[in-house]
Length: 224
Image (cartoon, rainbow, N blue to C red; front, side):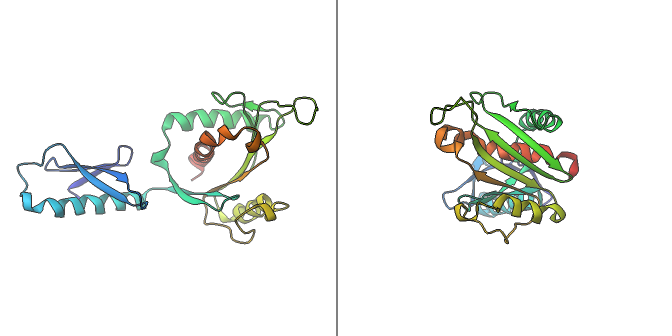
């Protein structure tokens, strides 16, 4: 497959002849390819199907070789692979700065830009990280305005820390979670537990999964 070059950011495979194929997720969760532009005159038209298969094979191999994180939602049991190419360098840079600020002052809430006042707190122990994302201050039962946790997520980069962190995320919450305390996924992983604040600010669920992935990749950084 050396005749193919793969770009996992644009999801394209390009042949030395000029043939280009773009891939997209299909409804079944697999990948389907579509030719971009005209079919090169240097290739026999009756070989088109074979070349499309070759492009698909080359693209899938590149995906398999790429680094990924297992992304688990503890509350629902949903699991997916998060690939590095899915997260922009700009987003990782922003999350790295936020994470550095949060880790430098773990008792202080770090404001997350463009989230209507949500904040984060974080602590790290070696190659393990735990983060809580909070709502803006809200009034609950006539009390003074206070922040409520939206989601707590952990990031584990190796098995030495992974099993312990996985148990920590489950303890006292087992009845509310779809995952099992003794069934830790392969590292590296990011695992999120949805908290009470999600009922107060449900619109945050639209962006918070992406934020979890960005922070996880920012933490992974040079620790890989």
